[in-house]
Amino acid sequence: YHPEFLCSLLNEQPMGFYPPDSLVHEAQRVGVEVLPPCVSTSAAACRVERKGEPGAPGQAGCLGNGAVRMGLGYVNGVKEHEIRALATERDEGGPWRSLGDLAARSGASAETLGKLAWAGACDTLAEGPVEGRRRQALWQLGVAVPGVPVSEGTQLALPLEPHAGPELRALSAWERMLADYGSTGVTLREHPLALMRQGLPADLSTSAQLERTGNGRRVRVAGLVIARQRPATAKGITFMLLEDELGTINLIVPLATQERFRLAVRAEPLVLATGRLEQREGTTNVLVDHIERLERPDLPRAKVTHIEPRRAWSTEEQEEADLRAVAPAGHSFGRRGR
Picture 1 (cartoon, rainbow, N blue to C red):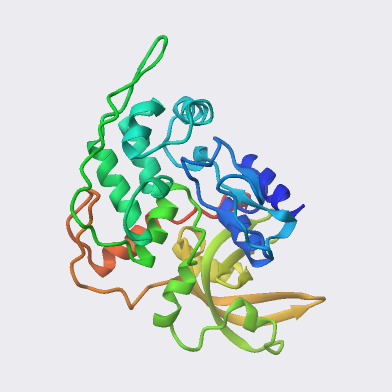
Picture 2: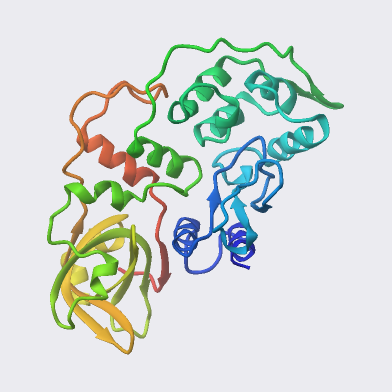
């Protein structure tokens, strides 16, 4: 019951040790298919879609004969009552025929529609190349006329179809990953470390390579911080769990190392660590003596024009800041540090 178990965990967040993004990545590594939120098929909560259902996947290798469809409620900032009303109208009034129909019938505000579009939840109603549909949906819903909620329900707007708009550049893999993290906190496609790997130092070991590395060897690793633990009984030691595109990495950070690199240990979402590999009783750890913020040196410095009205151009430093701003926060456990 792999899909059912993952679906239950996602619907009970926040809970447990692992954030939703890590749960999804681990499930994907063992063969569970996870699908993005979609206004045409998603409920408010996550659910398991069976083969043969409208919109359900057809891959034969999906564990548990189903895939986990993320709920519309996973989109940051949407209003619960609007999402539930949207799903009810779709199920009772029939499928959305277009983006204009969605805006007119759903009862969702322009703000909620925009957030759904930026999460990729409206891609099935947009036209054009798949990679460009997110921006097209965002543009069209920005000029669509939404229905107006009244005491008796939703006062429908005229189902006027918005103009197709200009031909917009498709999102790059990096921009799509940022949009996913910024809208749902979960990325279903490229992992940040997979996109960064080509520009990182060649001597970095992946989580998979650590399993084949000899005990006591010095190694360098990098990853997204999933969790930090500082138990009261650990004499000041901080335990960190990193994730790269292939799995997880356990870090042991002694007190002296933590004091030297306090900001990286306590606050950075992406880190690069150096230390000695320890393999004991089937557990692989890195005893860290140096840890720092992970940089992405391969980012282009050319100007990039965005449709979203945040700013008109981007530099390498700003792109790095974008990832740090939207990357899921690692869970922290144990006593507070000084």
